[in-house]
Image (tube, rainbow, N blue to C red; front, side, top):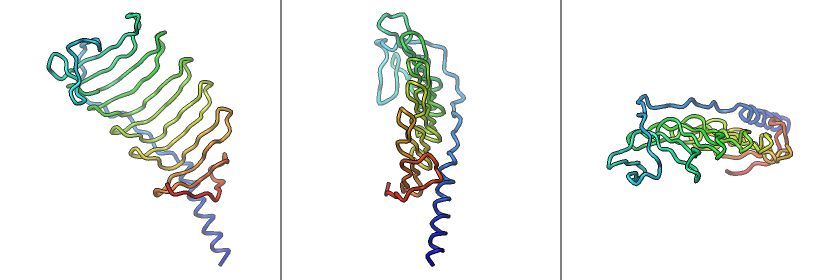
Length: 202
């Protein structure tokens, strides 16, 4: 009997390890087929206003580009696209030296596709995936030196599967999985098959 229990326990943890090692597939951005007009308006224009999350310009829902400038009024801080007052298509923001800071996408006012952020030194800072305004797939973060410090998996905005965090020196900080609403601890180990006995309610 004890051997059967031990075998079942091993099979269960191997299944958990298999789930933890298989990432959720990221999704491609789902963009509106409509084209954002090539109209540009400064974000400080007095005729712009926000009505319950919808951007209006000259009393009509705005379709076109909004741009912001740094205080020197020469360098672009960001460029944002709107269609009928809602966020649409590509959004970019920049550091004051002109280097890209953020890149993301919207469709019908909802976040979609890859969201990327860079450190001032040009190295990746964050790379998240969105679908229908929610986290979906693999989400990663790096420190300024370029070392991976976080790798999370999401499904419909909720953690699911393997979740890993590292210290800046590369040592593991947290390594666990979320399955069936429960968190199974994999703390202090780099091998996602080497499961500890720590089991927590999520």
